Length: 584
Image (cartoon, rainbow, N blue to C red):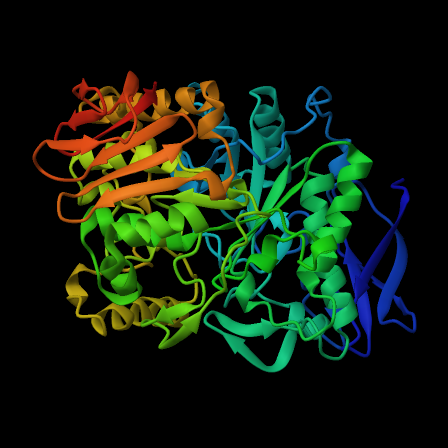
């Protein structure tokens, strides 16, 4: 006989809620706060769902831990504490000084599962990164998706292996000395399979963002909505042993309260960190260019650990590729001076005019108080690849020499470096926008919307991949056989050498932005970054350049290709190359 178990759900909207457990329906009682509860005999893997009002079809638990038959099916009980963890010796690691590797479970391996990804962790260890950042894995409708159409935030998608596989993956990462950061989305829900509005007012009245209705963070009944979000964050960190969260597009979290939901989350995560005895990290993706996001709460900030720095990406991308359309326009106009500005201050738009936004944007970073590691710097990420019309990586545009130059600037920067999967060897496979909406109308609308969006920017509709075509997903899977071929193995060696150099020389992990100096020449296309006693010397031109270092050059610690020639304070660098030099 199964033991009694409590089933509970917050559902202030329906007038009646019943729970179906293994085919049998039971009444539930409601308290004054809108919570419904019932004690029912149920096995540890019982299937269940809730019937709302006079509904005859049970719908999933908003806090479901497992959805074996997809987001429209019954929930299945799952007790995360039953897993036998092997990471008792893992005490976490701080983000400061670390390097992050972003990957999508479905396209990281041919199998597209968490268990298959475990088999590739050795590659990441040999590469020299410290954290694995997983794109969203929570429950979505269909078989494959970027992850940003999730509707059940507490469940792990079954195609990836479900919650048990997730725990195995985190455990394996920790045994390899790798921390895990989970990308989570709290600013919207996917367009298919979202039953939450039938339970509670998940959406704000009249609010919307790029992806749909805004989440109700400060309207009526928003206390429990905020609790739903914060409890989810704590679940990943506590029950799944995750080391940090990447918070998607926090600028779309509209919160009119005196205490922003992000500040509230940071407070609770800090408490949990003290309880579990390991560092827990919150990383924001923010378009606000507001340093208060990562300023400690005692100094009047929201207290998040770090944030992505798109400005650094845009500056570096435009310098390397020459692209200047859309939001790249200001960065292309800024040239090497703009790149120097982001290397020393994190933001390009720090109160400056933004032509793309047609207004002034951002505010300066106080480099005397905020360290560089609080900003993630990268040359590629899932957004900057997948949101291009054809999903082309920068490796489709740049020469091997300039790819190595880009890697050098990222991995010697004062920021927390981040790599996107396959970037380390210059993968030629694209990473395109893909969906698998089962509803034909939604699938057509998604495809037509994608094509129309890029047509407005002058792209030929025929070159924009259909996100619903299964081949769009298949094309986006990494080709691991490339590692053993030129020029991929040479670029991989560059990344490994740079990461080893970063670990060996404290000057390269020094996060003091105020100590970073940059010299450059736009006409001759060279750049020198001062990193303590080291100089990062870059030649972006297609012919050799003679560069004055201001100080006598010493040993060449690293070069992307042919060694530069040293003559006192002068270094002659080959075309499209970079080097790291000690000084005397």
